Every structure is written in C-alpha cells, then in structure tokens.
Image 1: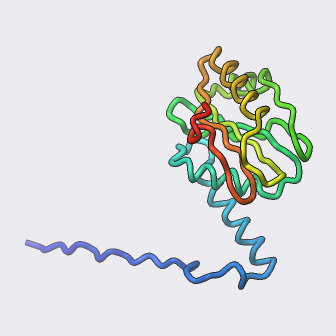
Image 2: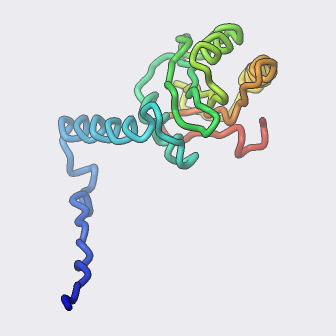
Length: 171
C-alpha cells in the first residue's frame, strides 16, 4: 500500500511589492501602463465574464485615461454577461460627444448582445454626471429596451475617478 503525500502549497511571490511609482522613470511607467492594459484586456476579452464592477471600472479608466477628447462606447455582453466586444462608437470634443441611439442599437443587434455597459470619459477630470449624461442614458436605455437589450451600467471615467450610474441609482 503506497502512501500519497499531498503536495506542499506553492508560495506565490509578488514581484511588485515595495515598488513606489516615484522611483520609476518615464519608460518604466509607460511599460507598467502597457502591462496593466494587457492584463485588463485579457480579463475583458471576448468570451470572458465581467467579474466585478471594480475590474470594469479599472479597465475603462486605463483605456480612456490619456484621451484629450470625449469618447463614448459600449461593452457588449451576451445573456450571461460575457464580453462579446468593446467598442468606442463616438468621438467628440473636449467637452462633449454626439451619441446616436440608432447607432448603439444597430451595433448591439449586429453583435447579438443581450446587455450593454455604456461608458464615456470626461477629459475635464470631473466625473459627476451632467444633465446631458443622464438624458442620453435614459434615451439609450429606452431605445435598447425596445429590442430587449438591458443597460447594466453607465460609467463616467476620469484619470482620478469614475462614477457608476447603477451604484448611484441613476439607472
């Protein structure tokens, strides 16, 4: 009779512990941002499930952090909230972007999406939703509801923070 011993747990080392961003040069900072984007894109690639609002918030912040003009887009999801595609649909100016519900609905239908997460950035650095932000969210929610596509959230993203309409009770 042979005795089996269970393997000892492998200790995982965090090679980033103790690194302070003030110690990094510009090239190292750029490399760190690029590496972060790769990690987050892997977590949001087609077929993966959105595991948490914080993960999605971080992904969107990194994706939009350096934009000088407003960008509006959608995370298109299947009925189990797996990512189908992430699309930036509209480009604007420093203080706004024109958003057309028809285009969002067409794209969602073309991708056979069951749900969407809307997002846009505020280059001003102020993440508070404007009246126009709330109005377009309602128009999009109403338009998408006509074809049975749910709006799960709308994130407004800046370099320093982001606001979730769902968390604020605005959806």
